[in-house]
Image (cartoon, rainbow, N blue to C red):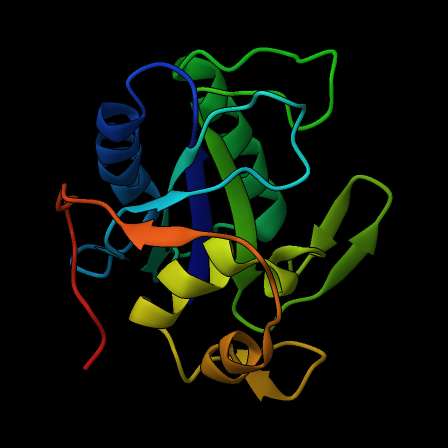
Length: 173
C-alpha cells in the first residue's frame, strides 16, 4: 500500500486538490485508489503570512514494477504540472505539494530521499487524513499504527473538515 500526503495553499487549492487526487490514479492498480476527505489546516513551519492549506491523503496499491524512487520522481513532475516551481524560501506557499509518506514497509535513508517521510508522523495535517484511510497500518520503524500515532500527537495545529467531497473518497470501515 502506498500512502501519499497532498497539500495546497496557493491558487484554487480546492480544485487543485480534486484534480491532483484524480491524477494519482495513473500510478494505482485499477480500483485501488481511495482518498480521505479534504481538510483545512493551519500552516506548519511556513513563512509568516502563509495562508491555510487544503490537505488530504490518498492510498492505493502501486502498479507492478513501480519503485518508490520512480513514484517520487513522478510525484515531483506532477507538482510541476500543477504550477509548482522552485521556491527560494523553504515551505513557501505552493500550488501542490505531494509527499510520498509510505510505500509498503519499504525504508530509504538517502541524502535526497527518506522513506517513510521523516516528519509526517509528527504532523496532524498528515495523520488526520491518513487515519481515515489506513488507521491500522503500522508506521515503519515505530511499531505503532497510524491511529496510535494520531492519538499520541500533541500539537497546536488546527485541522477542520472541508465541505468539498473529493474524488475516490472512501472512509475506512
